[in-house]
Amino acid sequence: MSQDQLSDFRSDTVTRPTPAMRRAMAEADVGDDVFGEDPMVNRLQERIAEILGKEAALFVPSGTMSNVLAVRTLCQPGDELICELNSHIYNYEQSGYAQLCGVAARPVEGARGILRLELLTGLIRPSNAHQPRTRLLCLENTHNRGGGSIQPLDELRRICHWARENHLALHLDGARLFNAVVATGIAAHRWAEPFDTVNICFSKGLGAPVGSAIVASRELIAAAHRHRKVLGGGMRQAGILAAAALYALEHHVDRLGEDHENARRLAEGIASIPKLRLDPEIVETNMVFFQVDPAWGSADQFCQALKQHGVLMMATARQRIRAVTHLDVGPRDVDRALSAMQGVIRTMPPCSVAGVA
Ligand SMILES: *Cc1c(COP(=O)(O)O)cnc(C)c1O
Image 1: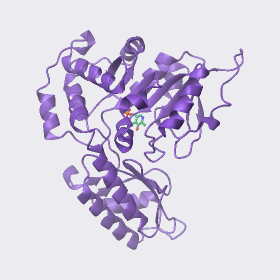
Image 2: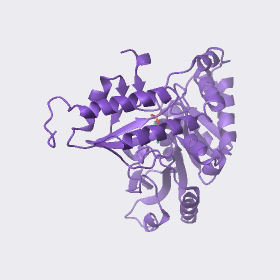
Image 3: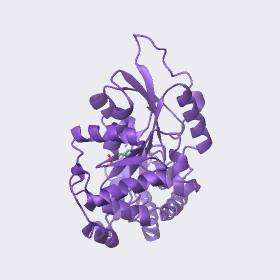
Image 4: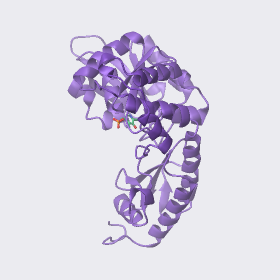
Protein backbone atom coordinates (compact mmCIF):
# COMPACT_ATOMS: atom_id res chain seq x y z
CA MET A 1 0.00 0.00 0.00
CA SER A 2 1.34 3.44 -0.85
CA GLN A 3 1.61 6.16 1.78
CA ASP A 4 -1.55 7.79 0.42
CA GLN A 5 -3.65 4.68 1.04
CA LEU A 6 -2.61 4.27 4.67
CA SER A 7 -4.27 5.79 7.71
CA ASP A 8 -1.17 6.54 9.73
CA PHE A 9 -1.83 7.20 13.43
CA ARG A 10 1.69 6.35 14.62
CA SER A 11 2.70 9.95 15.26
CA ASP A 12 1.91 13.53 14.33
CA THR A 13 5.40 13.68 12.81
CA VAL A 14 4.32 11.68 9.72
CA THR A 15 2.51 14.58 8.07
CA ARG A 16 3.72 15.67 4.66
CA PRO A 17 3.71 19.30 3.56
CA THR A 18 0.47 20.35 1.91
CA PRO A 19 0.54 21.75 -1.65
CA ALA A 20 0.15 25.30 -0.25
CA MET A 21 2.99 24.75 2.22
CA ARG A 22 5.18 23.40 -0.59
CA ARG A 23 4.41 26.52 -2.61
CA ALA A 24 5.43 28.72 0.32
CA MET A 25 8.68 26.74 0.54
CA ALA A 26 9.35 26.95 -3.19
CA GLU A 27 8.79 30.70 -3.24
CA ALA A 28 10.78 31.42 -0.06
CA ASP A 29 13.24 34.28 -0.27
CA VAL A 30 16.49 32.82 1.15
CA GLY A 31 20.01 33.78 2.20
CA ASP A 32 22.83 32.29 4.24
CA ASP A 33 21.62 31.92 7.80
CA VAL A 34 25.13 31.32 9.15
CA PHE A 35 25.67 34.96 8.14
CA GLY A 36 22.29 35.79 9.72
CA GLU A 37 21.06 36.70 6.24
CA ASP A 38 18.15 34.39 5.64
CA PRO A 39 15.01 36.56 5.63
CA MET A 40 12.59 33.69 6.22
CA VAL A 41 14.59 32.33 9.17
CA ASN A 42 14.79 35.82 10.64
CA ARG A 43 11.07 36.35 10.15
CA LEU A 44 10.23 32.97 11.73
CA GLN A 45 12.45 33.65 14.74
CA GLU A 46 10.83 37.06 15.27
CA ARG A 47 7.34 35.65 14.85
CA ILE A 48 7.68 32.72 17.26
CA ALA A 49 9.38 34.95 19.86
CA GLU A 50 6.49 37.41 19.54
CA ILE A 51 3.85 34.66 19.91
CA LEU A 52 5.56 33.36 23.06
CA GLY A 53 6.15 36.82 24.50
CA LYS A 54 9.94 36.43 24.58
CA GLU A 55 12.72 38.58 23.13
CA ALA A 56 14.31 36.16 20.69
CA ALA A 57 14.34 32.70 19.15
CA LEU A 58 16.68 30.38 17.30
CA PHE A 59 15.62 28.01 14.51
CA VAL A 60 17.10 24.52 14.96
CA PRO A 61 16.77 21.23 13.05
CA SER A 62 15.00 19.28 15.81
CA GLY A 63 13.35 19.41 19.22
CA THR A 64 16.17 17.25 20.55
CA MET A 65 18.67 19.96 19.63
CA SER A 66 16.43 22.62 21.11
CA ASN A 67 16.22 20.76 24.44
CA VAL A 68 19.95 20.09 24.61
CA LEU A 69 20.67 23.75 23.82
CA ALA A 70 18.42 24.79 26.68
CA VAL A 71 20.31 22.58 29.13
CA ARG A 72 23.70 23.61 27.71
CA THR A 73 22.74 27.27 28.01
CA LEU A 74 21.20 27.13 31.49
CA CYS A 75 23.55 24.65 33.23
CA GLN A 76 27.20 23.95 33.97
CA PRO A 77 28.86 20.52 34.26
CA GLY A 78 28.15 19.15 37.73
CA ASP A 79 24.62 20.58 37.76
CA GLU A 80 21.47 18.51 38.10
CA LEU A 81 18.14 18.99 36.37
CA ILE A 82 14.76 17.83 37.66
CA CYS A 83 12.36 16.38 35.10
CA GLU A 84 9.35 14.09 34.89
CA LEU A 85 10.12 10.36 34.77
CA ASN A 86 8.29 9.77 31.48
CA SER A 87 9.40 13.00 29.82
CA HIS A 88 10.85 13.07 26.32
CA ILE A 89 14.06 14.72 27.49
CA TYR A 90 14.69 11.89 29.99
CA ASN A 91 13.70 8.95 27.77
CA TYR A 92 14.12 9.71 24.09
CA GLU A 93 17.12 11.98 23.63
CA GLN A 94 20.00 9.68 24.58
CA SER A 95 20.49 11.65 27.79
CA GLY A 96 22.00 14.47 25.75
CA TYR A 97 22.09 16.55 28.93
CA ALA A 98 24.64 14.01 30.27
CA GLN A 99 26.53 13.19 27.05
CA LEU A 100 26.87 16.75 25.83
CA CYS A 101 26.41 18.97 28.89
CA GLY A 102 27.82 17.05 31.89
CA VAL A 103 24.49 17.42 33.66
CA ALA A 104 22.71 14.78 35.77
CA ALA A 105 18.96 14.20 35.81
CA ARG A 106 16.68 13.63 38.78
CA PRO A 107 13.42 12.20 37.45
CA VAL A 108 10.16 12.48 39.39
CA GLU A 109 7.07 10.52 38.44
CA GLY A 110 3.91 12.53 37.86
CA ALA A 111 0.36 11.34 37.21
CA ARG A 112 -0.02 11.03 33.43
CA GLY A 113 3.16 13.10 33.27
CA ILE A 114 1.66 15.91 35.34
CA LEU A 115 3.74 17.14 38.28
CA ARG A 116 2.46 18.69 41.49
CA LEU A 117 4.47 20.98 43.72
CA GLU A 118 4.38 18.49 46.62
CA LEU A 119 6.37 16.02 44.53
CA LEU A 120 9.22 18.50 44.12
CA THR A 121 9.65 20.39 47.35
CA GLY A 122 12.18 18.04 48.97
CA LEU A 123 14.45 17.81 45.95
CA ILE A 124 16.69 20.86 46.23
CA ARG A 125 20.08 19.58 47.33
CA PRO A 126 22.09 21.36 50.00
CA SER A 127 25.08 23.26 48.75
CA ASN A 128 28.20 21.25 49.62
CA ALA A 129 31.17 19.63 47.90
CA HIS A 130 29.56 16.16 47.77
CA GLN A 131 26.42 16.71 45.76
CA PRO A 132 25.50 17.99 42.31
CA ARG A 133 23.96 21.47 42.21
CA THR A 134 20.19 21.44 41.66
CA ARG A 135 20.00 23.95 38.87
CA LEU A 136 17.16 23.42 36.36
CA LEU A 137 13.55 22.27 36.24
CA CYS A 138 12.24 20.93 32.92
CA LEU A 139 8.51 20.57 32.30
CA GLU A 140 6.75 19.10 29.24
CA ASN A 141 3.43 20.47 27.94
CA THR A 142 1.55 18.74 26.45
CA HIS A 143 3.07 15.58 27.88
CA ASN A 144 3.68 12.94 25.22
CA ARG A 145 3.90 9.70 27.22
CA GLY A 146 1.40 11.15 29.66
CA GLY A 147 -1.16 10.79 26.86
CA GLY A 148 -1.03 14.32 25.44
CA SER A 149 -1.95 15.59 28.89
CA ILE A 150 -1.99 19.28 29.79
CA GLN A 151 -0.22 20.59 32.87
CA PRO A 152 -2.88 22.80 34.54
CA LEU A 153 -1.74 26.44 34.41
CA ASP A 154 -2.33 27.24 38.10
CA GLU A 155 -0.25 24.33 39.34
CA LEU A 156 2.40 25.05 36.71
CA ARG A 157 2.69 28.60 38.02
CA ARG A 158 2.98 27.39 41.62
CA ILE A 159 5.74 24.99 40.60
CA CYS A 160 7.61 27.67 38.66
CA HIS A 161 7.28 30.13 41.55
CA TRP A 162 8.81 27.53 43.89
CA ALA A 163 11.60 26.87 41.37
CA ARG A 164 12.43 30.60 41.19
CA GLU A 165 12.50 30.92 44.97
CA ASN A 166 15.07 28.12 44.95
CA HIS A 167 17.17 29.76 42.22
CA LEU A 168 16.38 27.13 39.60
CA ALA A 169 16.29 27.93 35.91
CA LEU A 170 13.17 26.80 34.02
CA HIS A 171 12.83 25.08 30.65
CA LEU A 172 9.57 24.14 28.97
CA ASP A 173 9.59 21.35 26.41
CA GLY A 174 6.65 22.70 24.45
CA ALA A 175 7.05 20.41 21.45
CA ARG A 176 3.23 20.37 21.41
CA LEU A 177 2.52 23.61 23.29
CA PHE A 178 0.06 24.74 20.61
CA ASN A 179 -2.07 21.68 21.31
CA ALA A 180 -2.36 22.94 24.90
CA VAL A 181 -3.11 26.45 23.63
CA VAL A 182 -5.93 25.31 21.37
CA ALA A 183 -7.37 22.83 23.90
CA THR A 184 -7.50 25.38 26.74
CA GLY A 185 -7.87 28.71 24.95
CA ILE A 186 -4.97 29.98 27.09
CA ALA A 187 -2.54 32.00 24.94
CA ALA A 188 0.95 30.66 24.24
CA HIS A 189 2.67 33.62 25.92
CA ARG A 190 0.87 32.84 29.18
CA TRP A 191 2.07 29.25 29.12
CA ALA A 192 5.60 30.42 28.27
CA GLU A 193 5.77 33.32 30.72
CA PRO A 194 7.38 31.58 33.75
CA PHE A 195 10.13 29.88 31.70
CA ASP A 196 13.63 30.97 30.73
CA THR A 197 13.63 28.81 27.61
CA VAL A 198 10.89 27.12 25.58
CA ASN A 199 11.17 24.46 22.88
CA ILE A 200 8.56 24.58 20.11
CA CYS A 201 8.35 21.89 17.38
CA PHE A 202 7.02 22.82 13.95
CA SER A 203 7.28 19.23 12.74
CA LYS A 204 4.66 17.70 15.05
CA GLY A 205 1.00 18.68 14.89
CA LEU A 206 1.81 21.90 13.06
CA GLY A 207 2.72 19.82 10.02
CA ALA A 208 6.01 21.35 8.85
CA PRO A 209 8.55 18.86 7.48
CA VAL A 210 11.51 19.92 9.65
CA GLY A 211 12.42 22.21 12.50
CA SER A 212 12.00 23.49 16.01
CA ALA A 213 12.81 26.69 17.83
CA ILE A 214 14.30 27.55 21.18
CA VAL A 215 12.72 30.75 22.47
CA ALA A 216 14.18 32.89 25.29
CA SER A 217 15.78 36.23 26.17
CA ARG A 218 18.22 37.85 23.72
CA GLU A 219 21.11 37.00 25.99
CA LEU A 220 20.24 33.30 26.30
CA ILE A 221 19.60 33.01 22.55
CA ALA A 222 23.05 34.50 21.85
CA ALA A 223 24.57 31.77 24.04
CA ALA A 224 22.40 29.06 22.44
CA HIS A 225 23.47 30.30 18.99
CA ARG A 226 27.09 29.63 19.89
CA HIS A 227 26.29 26.11 21.18
CA ARG A 228 24.16 25.35 18.10
CA LYS A 229 27.24 25.84 15.94
CA VAL A 230 29.31 23.14 17.68
CA LEU A 231 26.39 20.70 17.43
CA GLY A 232 26.46 21.17 13.66
CA GLY A 233 23.17 23.05 13.68
CA GLY A 234 24.32 26.07 11.68
CA MET A 235 22.30 25.81 8.46
CA ARG A 236 22.60 27.83 5.27
CA GLN A 237 19.54 28.60 3.09
CA ALA A 238 17.31 27.25 5.84
CA GLY A 239 14.60 29.71 4.79
CA ILE A 240 13.14 26.90 2.64
CA LEU A 241 12.34 25.15 5.95
CA ALA A 242 11.51 28.28 7.90
CA ALA A 243 8.93 29.14 5.22
CA ALA A 244 7.12 25.89 5.99
CA ALA A 245 7.18 26.64 9.72
CA LEU A 246 5.88 30.19 9.13
CA TYR A 247 3.13 28.80 6.94
CA ALA A 248 2.24 26.32 9.71
CA LEU A 249 2.04 29.07 12.34
CA GLU A 250 -0.27 31.02 10.07
CA HIS A 251 -2.55 28.19 8.91
CA HIS A 252 -2.20 25.10 11.07
CA VAL A 253 -2.62 26.25 14.67
CA ASP A 254 -6.38 26.69 14.97
CA ARG A 255 -7.06 23.47 13.09
CA LEU A 256 -5.40 21.47 15.92
CA GLY A 257 -8.92 21.55 17.40
CA GLU A 258 -9.99 19.15 14.63
CA ASP A 259 -7.25 16.75 15.69
CA HIS A 260 -8.50 16.89 19.26
CA GLU A 261 -12.06 16.22 18.09
CA ASN A 262 -10.90 13.26 15.98
CA ALA A 263 -8.89 11.89 18.92
CA ARG A 264 -11.92 12.10 21.20
CA ARG A 265 -14.10 10.27 18.70
CA LEU A 266 -11.42 7.62 18.21
CA ALA A 267 -11.19 7.19 21.98
CA GLU A 268 -14.96 6.86 22.39
CA GLY A 269 -15.00 4.21 19.67
CA ILE A 270 -12.12 2.29 21.22
CA ALA A 271 -13.84 2.35 24.61
CA SER A 272 -16.73 0.38 23.13
CA ILE A 273 -14.55 -2.38 21.59
CA PRO A 274 -14.20 -5.51 23.71
CA LYS A 275 -10.66 -6.45 24.82
CA LEU A 276 -9.45 -2.87 24.37
CA ARG A 277 -9.18 -0.58 27.35
CA LEU A 278 -8.52 3.12 27.20
CA ASP A 279 -5.51 4.12 29.21
CA PRO A 280 -6.42 6.54 30.59
CA GLU A 281 -9.95 7.46 29.62
CA ILE A 282 -9.19 11.15 29.49
CA VAL A 283 -8.18 12.42 26.07
CA GLU A 284 -7.24 16.06 26.33
CA THR A 285 -5.49 16.70 23.01
CA ASN A 286 -4.40 14.63 19.99
CA MET A 287 -3.15 11.43 21.62
CA VAL A 288 -5.02 8.26 22.47
CA PHE A 289 -3.30 5.56 24.50
CA PHE A 290 -5.04 2.23 25.01
CA GLN A 291 -4.34 -1.29 26.24
CA VAL A 292 -4.92 -4.59 24.49
CA ASP A 293 -6.13 -7.40 26.74
CA PRO A 294 -3.32 -10.02 26.92
CA ALA A 295 -6.06 -12.64 26.39
CA TRP A 296 -6.18 -11.37 22.79
CA GLY A 297 -2.45 -10.96 22.24
CA SER A 298 0.28 -8.34 22.43
CA ALA A 299 0.26 -4.70 21.34
CA ASP A 300 2.76 -5.58 18.61
CA GLN A 301 0.53 -8.33 17.24
CA PHE A 302 -2.42 -5.97 17.31
CA CYS A 303 -0.51 -3.32 15.32
CA GLN A 304 0.67 -5.94 12.80
CA ALA A 305 -2.90 -7.11 12.30
CA LEU A 306 -4.17 -3.52 11.93
CA LYS A 307 -1.55 -2.90 9.28
CA GLN A 308 -3.23 -5.54 7.08
CA HIS A 309 -6.23 -3.17 7.04
CA GLY A 310 -4.05 -0.19 6.07
CA VAL A 311 -4.15 1.35 9.56
CA LEU A 312 -0.90 2.13 11.37
CA MET A 313 -0.59 2.58 15.14
CA MET A 314 2.40 2.22 17.45
CA ALA A 315 3.00 -0.25 20.28
CA THR A 316 4.67 1.67 23.12
CA ALA A 317 4.76 -1.19 25.67
CA ARG A 318 3.84 -4.89 25.75
CA GLN A 319 0.10 -4.21 25.91
CA ARG A 320 0.02 -0.47 25.25
CA ILE A 321 -0.68 1.27 21.94
CA ARG A 322 -0.51 4.91 20.93
CA ALA A 323 -2.64 6.54 18.27
CA VAL A 324 -2.07 10.18 17.36
CA THR A 325 -4.30 12.40 15.23
CA HIS A 326 -2.89 15.05 12.89
CA LEU A 327 -3.27 16.96 9.64
CA ASP A 328 -3.14 13.83 7.47
CA VAL A 329 -5.81 11.76 9.26
CA GLY A 330 -9.41 12.96 9.19
CA PRO A 331 -12.81 11.68 10.31
CA ARG A 332 -12.84 9.02 7.59
CA ASP A 333 -9.53 7.63 8.85
CA VAL A 334 -11.06 7.46 12.34
CA ASP A 335 -14.01 5.45 10.96
CA ARG A 336 -11.64 3.20 9.08
CA ALA A 337 -9.46 2.66 12.15
CA LEU A 338 -12.45 1.80 14.34
CA SER A 339 -13.87 -0.76 11.94
CA ALA A 340 -10.39 -2.23 11.40
CA MET A 341 -9.91 -2.54 15.16
CA GLN A 342 -13.30 -4.24 15.55
CA GLY A 343 -12.34 -6.68 12.79
CA VAL A 344 -8.95 -7.40 14.30
CA ILE A 345 -10.40 -8.07 17.76
CA ARG A 346 -12.85 -10.58 16.30
CA THR A 347 -9.97 -12.73 15.02
CA MET A 348 -7.12 -14.05 17.14
CA PRO A 349 -3.58 -13.09 16.13
CA PRO A 350 -1.56 -15.73 14.23
CA CYS A 351 0.70 -17.99 16.35
CA SER A 352 -0.69 -16.81 19.68
CA VAL A 353 -1.94 -18.80 22.63
CA ALA A 354 -4.63 -16.98 24.59
CA GLY A 355 -3.35 -15.52 27.82
CA VAL A 356 0.24 -16.50 27.05
CA ALA A 357 1.15 -14.54 23.91
C1 LIG B 1 9.25 15.04 19.36
C2 LIG B 1 9.55 15.59 20.70
C3 LIG B 1 10.79 16.17 20.98
C4 LIG B 1 11.98 16.11 20.06
O1 LIG B 1 11.77 16.48 18.79
P1 LIG B 1 12.63 15.87 17.56
O2 LIG B 1 12.38 16.90 16.54
O3 LIG B 1 12.03 14.54 17.25
O4 LIG B 1 14.04 15.79 17.96
C5 LIG B 1 10.96 16.74 22.23
N1 LIG B 1 9.98 16.71 23.14
C6 LIG B 1 8.79 16.14 22.91
C7 LIG B 1 7.75 16.17 23.97
C8 LIG B 1 8.53 15.54 21.68
O5 LIG B 1 7.36 14.95 21.46
